[in-house]
Image (cartoon, rainbow, N blue to C red; front, side, top):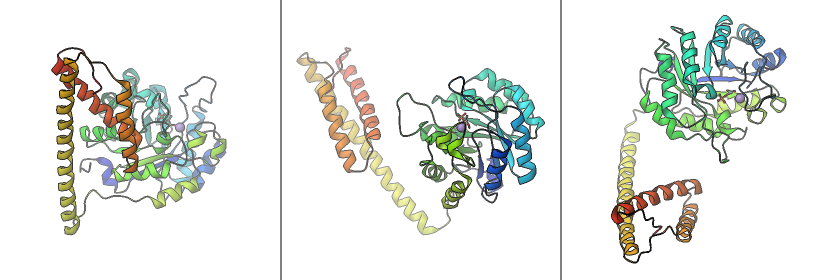
Amino acid sequence: MSNTDNWMRTIGKPLIIAGPCSAETEEQMMETAARIDPSYVQAFRAGIWKPRTKPNSFEGVGAIGLKWLLRVKQEFGFKTAVEVANSKHVKLALDHDVDILWIGARTTVNPFTVQEIAEALRDTDKTVMVKNPVNPDLELWIGAVERLQGQNIKNIAAVHRGFSTYKKTKYRNNPQWQIAFDFMNRMPDIPMICDPSHICGNREGIAETAQLAFNFEYDGLIIETHCNPDCALSDAKQQITPERLTEILKELELRKSDDEDAVYHSNLTRLRGEIDETDQMIIDSISQRMIISAQIGELKKEHNVAIFQAERWNQIRQKAVERGAKLGLSEEFIDKLLKAIHQESINHQNLIMNKNHISSE
Ligand code: PEP
Ligand code: MN
């Protein structure tokens, strides 16, 4: 994930953005900013126009909040960051000298709006960040970035804030890290910022998620920080105090992309060799399993028994989950792995039987 054309890497340290989910009052903004440690944080965020799931919730203070942001910039020297959701927002933000404009997760899903924002920002030197869309759609995320690039905007960053799921998980928005990794592979010159606040939806998980992001060599963090989180008008559960933020940032370990040390390199080469060998073994075992499964398919076909056997599937699953738990593998992972193997197995059996029969082995 390291590269030389990533414009943010030239700054030499991760970009840390902190500040409240929403601007609420001038006092709240000034107090929060006063308590944020500028030796760790470069930019101050605040939502002015808030996209809320339900009507009649707090929808932001509107343009007056931009005046408070400007005051934060003048008195504390932070760069300022705000969400924009249409060209009117862009104009107001630029009029108030906002440094970083971001496109929110609910806006990234809409190409018309992204295009409108991109055109309103044509040729800008400001930093423009694109949050991942709420749904796990890599192309939509990349498409939004391409719309900005199409308007000659150079300082673009992506923000990984996780993806919504119908089923409740321990996250408010499931990170699905692989999607962010795919983004980084496809767009290696676009810096990646992690938003642990919206991923976690609670205060407890923020430090761990932020550290994961640095382990994956992300370029920065955006963390919701409020002078009195319990009384926040939006996202109260996930906001932390400025003091807690400093504690978290102090403890984070930054990872380098490489190290010259010869012993490190030889150990890494050895371990990577072991990983490659293990991966081969996994593939070989899965292939072996498919061969057995195909034989079962033949047997069932002969005996005209070719229906999905839920009981057998539950047994397989249960055994694997128990074994996995003993070995430190999560139930979620075992579930995904087995479902993928089972699906491949069904595909193989269907090919062999050349009918639409499904067997659960
Ligand atoms: C926010 O940053 O406060 C916000 C609304 O985020 P998202 O667009 O990721 O939901
Ligand atoms: Mn928020």
